[in-house]
Image (tube, rainbow, N blue to C red; front, side, top):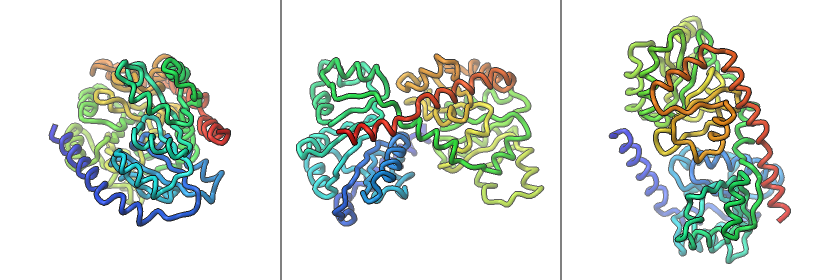
Length: 404
């Protein structure tokens, strides 16, 4: 609990400090006569959806400027130096005066909100100014406020979009029931992003050497409850290795993870990542049973070294990105809170993924994937085929915007 509260307090501090004097900062930096393409993301996951749009847009319109904004500190702090954006800022809070001043300063020619971002005053002002405004990779569910009897204000926000690009037919059908018809099914741009990962990601030599000497699995974006479950079954899985990349990489959290696996040889990535590989370091990597990734930004590269992966978050607010696993053709396991993620529902139905609610289930599936090569290959192939079938959303969204 103290770890979670510490994380919350740090994020709250960043959230507050990041918005202090924010409009003055934006005014001092944004000054251009070129068209401005504004992309707004809530956090890191939404950025990964917006990234293919930004990169393709820059290729199409190299003289235009790109403005990237975030709501969450975790997104901003990780991507504040993203090189393909001309400016990266927090989004000022959604008041009428902030929305007016922000738009007066940046004067966007086009605005795209990614997936779930619906801000009343910004959407109202964009609509009043006649600025083309879109939401991309959106997904809608019956329990959302747009479809409730009290959801009039939220339905009004949807009416301010020039067009809504949704992930699936179910979302489009739901919007039609409330009279929102400026909708098309384009798919999810994350598939394009994760497909790029398999092409662009090179070898991480230290991790490759670690994973070669025994069957290896990866636990990514884990929270304390995930780590406790993994530690509880690890002794039941002989002759295998584990790479664990937690969601939070504070020194206190990393130390706690290391104590969970104190009966085994544990090595931290920070201890070896900049060390030249020689016989001694290679021996250390081969002998270690657990590798703890105590830095951020490399998880998408790490997944390819596992026979399968466990993705965390499913015992909390919801699972993290499982597509980064599937793109490498690896089976994936996650916790019970996955239903709002279409890819998780789909991959369970297809047989490429497994849901666990208990330690016993995790133990069974982990054993099966480690010991049964045929099962592992079949489930992994399902995951890779799913990725390949769902790419192309970026092109469909940009083509749809151009036609409007």
